[in-house]
Image (cartoon, rainbow, N blue to C red; front, side, top):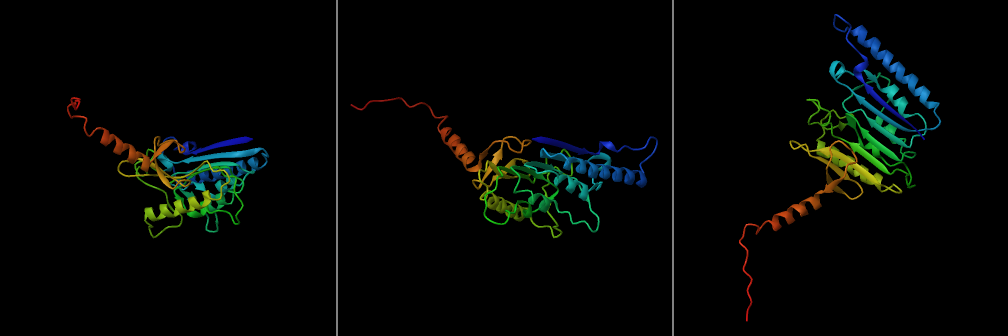
Amino acid sequence: MATVKLRLKNYAFRLPTGGDSDDDDYDAWAASFNSALTKLAATLRRCSRMRSLDVEVRVGGLLDHQAYLMAEPVADLLSVGRLTSLTFDSATCLFSRTPESGVHFCRSINALLPSLRRLRFRMESVCKSLLEPPPGDAPLALEEVIVNLSLSQLNHAITSVRHSRCCGDVAGTAFVQFKNALEAQATALAARLRQPRMVRIITHEFPSLDFYAFDALTGKRILLEDNIEWDAEGEAEDDAEADATEDDESDLFADEPPVTPFIVL
């Protein structure tokens, strides 16, 4: 099985020496970059043994909040081969779309679910169509599904306390409502998996920035021990509360003087 790991970062674009970048420089660079992605996708389609694709997109500095990536070339990358493992983490990247573009990443990736065994996903926007079970009632080979809604790990002031938003949401849907809908969809998908190992939705709380995962297999929220690894182990909230109660009870008489034993004759 062939694995392709692709890291897309903005370090390829530099300001011209002795002056500021103008629009022509930027547009030419962006066009060249997207053209290269299209050619890469065409090349990968010829890799018959390719089964795993790991795509990470990071934007910062000069290109911060500029939509230099076209949605179409990136969508082409997701359609290569017969993938069994896909990681797609575009975090805070904004994608440029042509007026006639019909690219919707959630639906594009959802179409891959019948062949995938492992899916990890994070974007600026996501919706429950990503996790919509395919038609019918046939069990799926998926074993791991992780959707990370937290953008707080990215060392950027704007993303420090943010979550992903719902695709196409212009009305400002409350995050709790959006999260609950996604968790319900994850639960429905988990019920269709033949041998599920992990199905979770990751979020964080503010101001503590504690990271939690909703476990769609048990319906419990898990406090993660590691806020970097998406599949980190953790402790279910109920268990954590029980441990805290036991600690409180064990310390209840810690400061009391010892009782002298006695015998009743």
